[in-house]
Length: 259
Figure 1 (cartoon, rainbow, N blue to C red):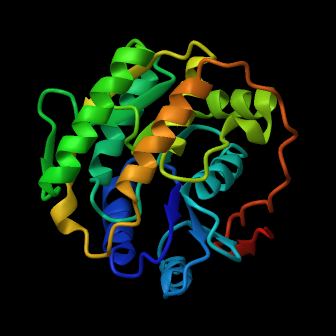
Figure 2: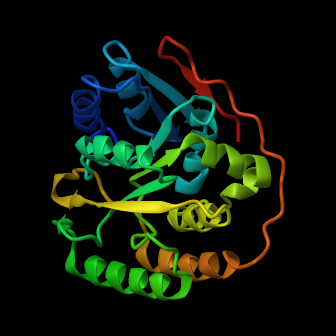
């Protein structure tokens, strides 16, 4: 499942890499949530549907990364198996999905592609972002202490589908309230409420392969991290989940989610 916003430069190459990584061993479908893009993102997805299993869901306006993740996870939870979330900017290698799925098979509920495991690398990340990322991650680890987790914010993860279903069943749309980049931290904190076992595999982040501009506002995101960590220790009420369109099956297609 890929959230995408104005990813016409990076998405074509990533879709090729996904197909090459998965088609020889996995029964898979790619769900792409186009979060109100103003470029050719949706057209690229529709073109890809001629040679790989792709479902397109569109937000009519840009609603934020968290909203796209929420929509995509709810759609993906209608399938069986393992849900993998992946950034659409081509900076993460889909070949790593196989190792992540294997760890799920070993009994873990969530597997994170981590920037903080031995063997991980971050190539081409600007120095100031690298320093801020490592400093904020160290602070989160110190406070949260989720066994098995070191990278709380990376969007490249694998989940057992029953974990996502349980989150939606318990909390409705409150399973993910953050609409910005802090959503990945919030999602992991809410998974922790289920006492789900977590493992990590080392990630080689290739920021140098990314052609599109970054959408993250670093200091705003760090402020939201503070809010999200605080809320992670508070009770979470259920808010009924809004319905989303069924993913197109088996033929690729598109649906539009009204805001």
